[in-house]
Amino acid sequence: MTTKLIVIGAGPGGYVAALRAAALGAKVTLIEQENLGGTCLNWGCIPSKIMKNSADIFLKFLKAEQFGINVQGKITPDMPALMQKKNKILDTQRKGIAGLLKQNGIVVEMGRAVIKSLKSVEVIFDDGNKKELEYEKLIIATGTTPLNVPDFPFDHDRVISSNDLLQIDHIPESMVIVGGGVIGCEFAFIFSALGSKVTIVEAMSRLLPLPSVDEDCSKLLLREMKKRKISVFCDTIVKSLETKNDQIFIHLDISPFTDNPKPKKLKTSVIQSEKMAVCIGRSALSSDLGLENIDLNTTAQGWIDVNERLETNIKGVYAIGDILGPQKVMLAHVASHEGIVAAQNAMGKDSVMNYDVIPGGIFTMPEIGTVGLSEVEAKKKGYEVEAFSVNFRTLGKAQAIDELAGMAKMIVEKKSNKVLGVHLIGAHATDLIAEATLAIQKGLSAEDIAHTIHAHPTLAEIMGEVSLKAAGMPIHG
Image 1 (cartoon, rainbow, N blue to C red):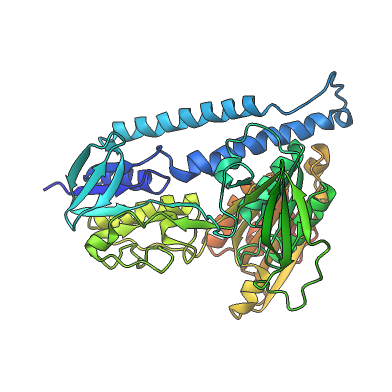
Image 2: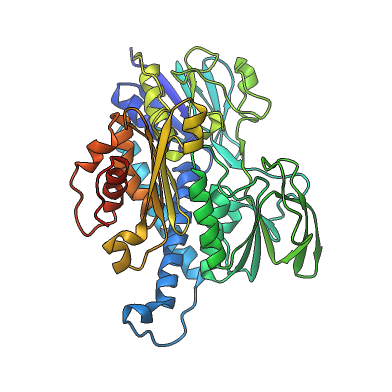
């Protein structure tokens, strides 16, 4: 008998799960309320990278003369044109996903899903019509939405979300970004490059206060922000705000959440700005799913609990992606792998999700790529470690393309010289981290990487250089 399987949510977790289940012989229906591709394609990874690419190009134009190129006339960003390009790319990507689903015999229903029982899901369409679908196995992949703070809720004009930033029609003269995490830092560089006066307000003691990001990367990123005249207030929160005419006045206070035992006094208590973008987290899209109809457990915040097979407390019901919350790893490529694992288990296989070796890419300027343990986390886990660093400016390719900022840091176990973590900050770091991911996945030592020939002149030599240093061998730079 063919298994009837429903996937709710067509993001990078949901549509990959649908494809894998179909390949294993399931009769798959995929339900999506908005657009194929989920947050990643429509409101996250892809549109923000389109904007970052334009910001990169704009910065290169501004210093074209340094490369022996004489640019005539005034160079200015064109936000309507950028938004048009973004929308065209997203539409192309959505069509590609739709074609892939169709080729694999997956039925797509565009509507809101409500779980009615352990056997059925109701789809509510925009026109009010409804359809009831039966299932034997269910995969929930509904994702998240930007966290709306009650003290200063989104009005989508002055107080805006990351979604709003991705459809903005002009470059704000000034912008305060609340939250110095991944999203906040990426947008800070993008809008600063395009001409906004940007300020970041971060509650913790450093930018990117994540266990997966080594503190040395945060320090270097802060230095680069200062070079670009981005103001940063760590150990600080937004207490309140008021709007006057076309400006908002943002009142600051010392953060009660900071991990800094001695936070510095505030440099200023009020910031005036045209916009305030709140980028301090995501909230679960689980409240209207009908989870109570099948007694499916969630946390107080609405995150869904799963076991290592990604099965919920209800047999045959699985959950993947960002809906699992920060207790897992909220990244698109992780959601896709979770989709494969969940689909395989739903189809009778025995697969386990492994979170040990997951690369992270942060698209700041310069980029950050991380995998494995940071130096602090490695020590917390009881390893006796050594850490080695090499600067990007030592590479001939970095000099040739004028991308000097950055470093590679490798954390190795002292006794075995096994690579425990690699943290890159520099040009194309998000691409370069792949080699380190494979090395840690395979349990390689610094010597293993050092004896691997890296092409010259390339930025990939940074991995060769830092591994040579970690292996106690002479570096080339």
